[in-house]
Image (tube, rainbow, N blue to C red; front, side, top):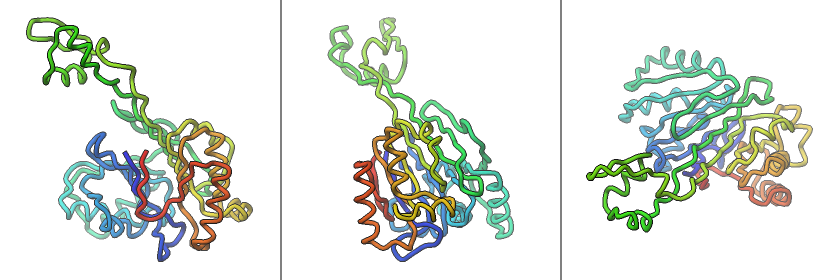
Length: 304
C-alpha cells in the first residue's frame, strides 16, 4: 500500500501546491482506493496520476473547511460520468451530509452508484476482516478529526516443506490451505492451517491528522503508527501564529512523531507563505528531531 499526494497546500492553492487531498492506494489489499479530504480541483489533480476515480471506495473528510471539501461534489459527479458504479462511503463531521446533498440537489447531479454518507464522532467508525478505523477529535476551532487505520494481522507464510512432509504434494491445495482455517482433502483428512503457516504478519497502522493545534493528549492516538500524516501549516519559528490560527508547526509534528514512537512522519498542509528555501530549511530542523520525516509535495508517492 502507498499514499499518493494530490494536494499538499494550506488554505488556498498556490502554483506548486493544490489544497488538501491524498489517497491511500489499497489495490493489492482490496482492489480499491481510500481518499482523505478533497479540496478544490482534486479531480483535476487526479488527471496527472494513474488514479482511477471508479476505484475510490471510501472518502474520509477531516473537517469542513473549504480547502478540504470544495472538490467533493465535483469528484462524486465525475466518478459517475466516468463509469463508476460501485458504492462509495463518505465519512466526515456533522454537516457533511447536508453539504453533499445540497450541492448535488441544486446542481441536479444524479449519481449512478450508491452513496452512503456517515457523520462521525469519536470512536470506531468502521471494521471488517481487513481494517478497523478509529477517530479522535482535534482542536481546530471547528470540529476536526484524526483517523487511525489499523490493518488486521495477516496469516503467516505457508511452509511448503512441512506440507510435503505431511504427504501433501504441491498444487492449488496449498493456496486453499492458506486461505482457510480448515481444509478437507479428497481422502477425508482434515488439514488445520495453523499447523502449516509461520507466525502472523503484523498489520500496518496509519494515522492521519486533520488541521489542529498540537496537544500532548494526541500522542496515545498516534502511538506506534507505521506512518503518521500531520499538518505543517507553519514553520518552526511561527509557533504563536500556529496556536492563534488553530494549527501546528513542522517541529510540533516531529515532536509528536518522536513521542508516539512512529516509524515514518509525513508533513503536509504547508502554507503558501513559505517558499522552497524556507521548506528546505525547516525540513532540516525537523529531521534533527525526527530523522524519518518526509515533506510531502503534490504528486509525491510514499510507501507504507
